[in-house]
Length: 141
Image 1 (tube, rainbow, N blue to C red):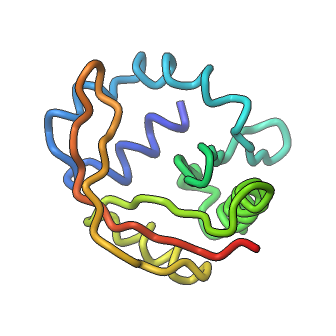
Image 2: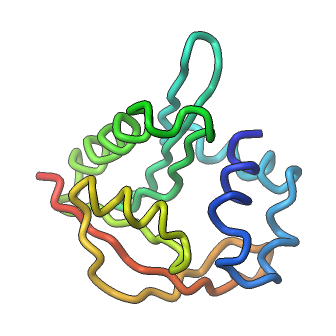
């Protein structure tokens, strides 16, 4: 599953170990259905190569399969998320794990601004796990 593989690639070593037990493949399968109405997918032929999910003014999830990185898929997905947020809000925001430098460089190149440290409450069963992140914002209107 793209989300599971992408999460491991971008987060292992950058988030608390206790979060790992809530990020098994089965956990991602459970997390998908409620997000589908606000998810945009990227495809190449019949193959899923990326997706972005928006929650209110937050660009909550952005994942692109390794082979599709650098092809413009991430740019297109992020632009779609920005348009979705702009329907109701002036500013979009997202959280990036402090150590995920590849993602942080991508957002900076895409016009997003690192505005603050953020202790992000990551979903983890009944009790969220706090992840040290940076909050990025972008004016979308």
